[in-house]
Image (cartoon, rainbow, N blue to C red; front, side):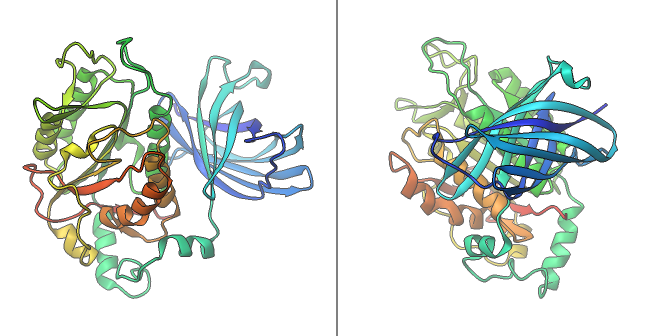
Amino acid sequence: MRFILITLFIVYSFLSPAQSVDVTGTWLGTSTFLKEHNQLKYELVQKGNMISGYVYANNLKKDSIKASVTGKIKDGKILLEGKEIIYKTGLACMAKNQLTYVLNNGKETLTGKWKGDMKLNTCSPLASGTVTLFREQPKNETAVIVQSTTSPTEQIEDKDAVGKALMSELGKRKYYALIIGINEYQDDEIQDLDNPINDAEQLAGVLTYHYSFDQENVTVLENPTREDIIKSLDRLTTTVTEKDNLLIFYAGHGIWNEQLNQGYWLPSDASLDSKSYWLSNSTLRDYVGGINSKHTLLISDACFSGGILKERAVFGNSRAVLEVYKLPSRKAMTSGTLKTVPDESVFIEYLLKNLVNNQSPLLSADQLFRYFKTAVINNSPNGQVPQYGPISQAGDEGGDFIFLKRGK
């Protein structure tokens, strides 16, 4: 039985006591429960320090809930309390949430954790999960952000019959995702990280809410061992078909070995004393080449992740989306070249922002990369330069991965 989480009590922590915020508007995002991702929408109206509105939740299947909420601002915090369930299908779990409000370069997010409370009578105090919300951009502002060029992709809804046919065909095909985040390492010599798991969960939520990635086809691995990752890749080799699309994401430590001229991911059981539990670029390349997808996109947010690319330069301008979809592709999008990248990732921040703000029904990975590459360069503390290109010797024939917007 799937549970839907309805927010009863929320605390927003601001960046500083003096900072204020108007939460009026729509907030979209996800909550997690037992590694399942439930979709959330808040519609809030703030007048002075009083707040009212509605919260919606569903898991993209049969469960659906709408509840009214009221609240107020007190001592620099926003408190919301559920008043009435308007309708529901399935089970509702009333929970307390504590979220952090972050404003960074115009992007507003609310992230944190929810936890059960016996006083609410519906949710065990042992139940808990994460919550991630993005403020929905007004349509006129969104157009400025993402419609920087005019192409057949942006005109599909009104003018492009071929594009409509492609959307219909893509809707029949499956989108798979393997999303990996590693915060904790067994080896004391390897520094733990703070953000990869949260980054992985946010990406999973964006893909399942905004794009045609069904939850049953999205696997999120938190602090996996090398064996865990290999088993997941093995499953994909027998599940993904030549008509399907696959996205693989990794956030965690990466390392480069000069002697072997080889890059590696470090799973949670990796040791600096031995490479036996490292995951090499060559192994990843073999799996990417062996999984029989139509298109595979590898996104790596790790140090030295650019080493997997055939060439460290931006992929050339795409032709019409239909043309790039016809040809198989094996592409990688990485947070940098052969250098270190920070734990608090500017790369994932702008990747998520552009996926959320995109209004085009079809978005190629090449277009996505061009939208946010400059923002990463300009806002990274160490001048990191993200990379995009084909993975060598993996079966790339010049096509591109296409993100399909989910119909609302």
